[in-house]
Amino acid sequence: MPENALKAVGLHRTFGTVHAVDDVSFTLPEGGSLGIVGESGSGKTTAARIVVGLEQADAGEVLVRGNARVARSRGRTQRLARAREVQMVFQDPYLSLDPRTSVEGVLRETLRLHFPDTDHDRRVRELLDQVGLGTRAAEARPRQLSGGQRQRVAIARALAVEPAVLVLDEAVAALDVSVQAQILNLLADIREQTRIGYLFITHDLGVVRCVTDDVIVMRKGRVVESGPTAEVLATPQHPYTRLLLESVPRPGWDPEAIAAARRAL
Image 1 (cartoon, helix red, strand yellow):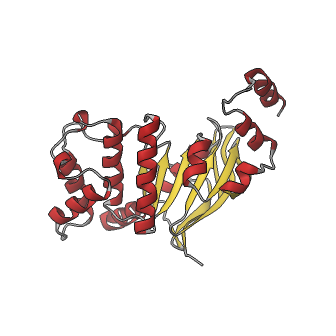
Image 2 (tube, rainbow, N blue to C red):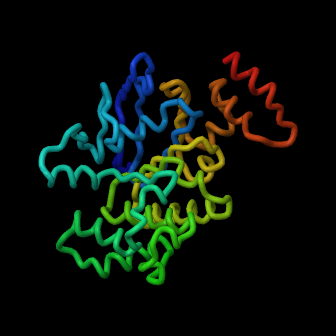
C-alpha cells in the first residue's frame, strides 16, 4: 500500500457564525489524485488553504507523509521546510507571477531560496522541459506568455521545491478548453513521473472525472459524499451530489427544475 502523502483529520474553521469547514477529513495517497468539489461557499477552498497553511484551522490536524504540519514554524529553516511540503497553483497565474521577472528568473529565485547549493542551470533546464516550455521561453516575461504558458510556469515553480503535495485551486478554470486539456495531460504525466500527490479544488465535474482517483463532495462546510471518482459520479448517493451532476448543461437541461431542487434541498 502506498504511503499517505497527505492526511487531514477533523478540520474545523469558523468565521463568525459561519462554519466554513466542519469536521472535514480525507487522505491522499502518495502519487494519488483527490478532488474536492462543491459550489461556491461549500468550504472547499478554505479546506485547501488550511492544508497549504494560508489559513489556520480552529481544530483538527494536517499530516504530510505521516508528520504533523506545525501551525507556526520557528526560524527560517523550519519555514522553508514547511513550505516545501505542500505547494499551491492558483487559478490566475498572471497574478501569482512577478511581471518584471523572466521565467528563468522566477525559477532561479525559488531554487536559490530552497536549494542554494544545487546546480541551478541544470535544474532550470529540467523544470522547463518537464512542463513543456523549453529554453526559448526562459527569457520571456509573464505578459509575453499565453495563459497556458503562464500556468506551466506556475507549475514549474511549484515543482522546483519537490513537494509531496500539489494543491490546484481551480487551476484550469481560466483557460480555454483546448488549453485545459493540455495542462491536465501535463499534470497526469508529471504525477506518473514523480509520484507527487494532487489535491484538485474545483467546481468542474469534467475535470474531476478526467484527473482524480477519488473525490469528496462538500456542502456548507461538510463532506456529504466521498469515494472513488468513477463510482461517485456514476451512482451518486447524496441528493446534493445528484444535484451537482444534474446542473451540468446538456440536451434537455431544465435550469428552472434544478433551481427548484436546490431550494428544496
